[in-house]
Length: 386
Ligand code: PLP
Image 1 (cartoon, rainbow, N blue to C red):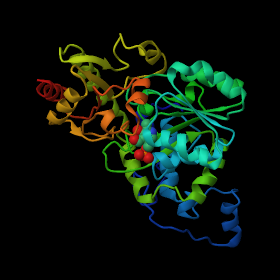
Image 2 (image 1 turned 45 degrees about the vertical axis):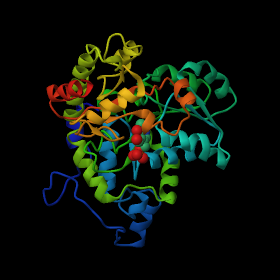
Image 3 (image 1 turned 120 degrees about the vertical axis):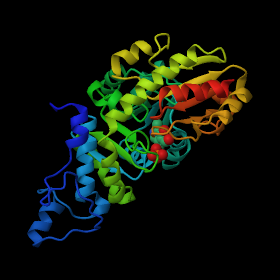
């Protein structure tokens, strides 16, 4: 991997096209024909790479996308999915049977899958808060096979030390999967820090325009094979049309995220100086508890930040409702800035006591910083806070 990330985002996974298209063409075809049974068997039995059937992911548009996705994380291989949840669930089914440990806060759908759905299949799951990390060793000793976490987390932007957790998990023979959705491959590469798998909701920064739903899993080719089997038979493969759209988005990933990093830092500093704000949670701020770790394991601090409004939950709701440029919507990572109040959206399903235990206050507003001018976004926050 000699080339820089921007070059890889543009050029990786763009096969030679006989008609001179600089981009991998879109094959909507569901099945592909062969000149002979021998040639068909070469692909079916894995001796020859090639197209076969789209649900298997053996479609040139999907294969080209997967090469580009793998290169963004410096991975040997990648699998593209119909959603981030599809990527996570296939991973959990392939590697979670001996038990899954989830560290810290995670996306609500992930928590629901782990807390109530996978246990129905007999899969043991353990949800540990960041403050309970000392219990991880004992759970791994009991035989849990997969440690999963987001870093930074949603919405408190808590950071976990990927290298340290990978060392501990590997000492017990467990795999480590990091949900890198919040950071994006521009700001953090968990595989280079010792993780075995990286998962993305590609719906967010990778897609980047709030106009496609997809997921990605990156790692060693041999480790991805069992996940490929689950994806194939659960029918979770990305559609070729979405694959082409996602490849298009990946070509601009670095310029988008680098600008989002810069703007988020400016907003974090402006909010820290504002008298109506109790607290700003952003890994780039020197006084943020995870700042030192962020400097060690991240290359940029990201486009996500959380502010805590003085005056509690009702005051925060008034600010969210008064914002004009920041749209009130629960997703993230797009070109347009979004605001969400976790207690009304991502963490609405949790009892107030559980939110408090997780350090999520009603006064929190999570901001996903888009590509508007920083000054305009800051002015919008100032008028809403006023
Ligand atoms: N991981 C994170 C961190 C998320 O924020 C989300 C969705 O919000 C997911 C996974 C699930 O992704 P998707 O909505 O693409 O299934």
